[in-house]
Image (cartoon, rainbow, N blue to C red; front, side):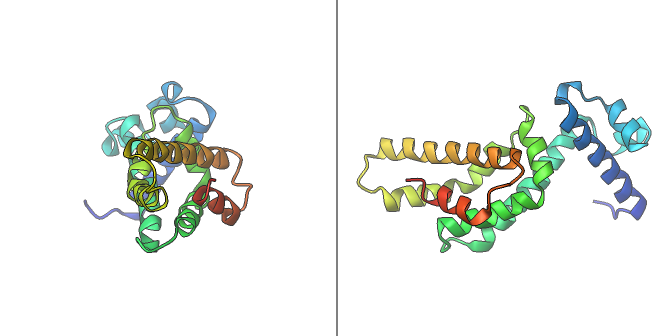
Length: 177
């Protein structure tokens, strides 16, 4: 990738921020490149110089969120407890709360599926260690329950403005029953 000048970084940030503002107001299908450009005060040609369309811009935003999510998840490493993993993940999410809430509200977003894929190894390990008495097919159901339930809890937490403190929520997600 070419070195970005300060002006290019400013322009990309303006486009991105304008897009997120519009997504907060309306669904992706109602957001247009023209509206993004008008709000960002850039020409359509400038937008298309950097992106092929709104889908590519949404993908870039999601990839940035996922990269930060993965970075936080990996900091704790395999030896960390489920609670420590959840604390790291929730901290990362809270730092970019508004962006996560907007992206998660977009039905087109694939960010939850990608984040679940990143956490799957930890969930598998925990299910195998803590529920070795269950039949393998039941462990699979339990894993799905934990993953999907956690995703919905985190989505609600973000939509509620991260009002619940991280430590108790991490404890709940780590030890749901």
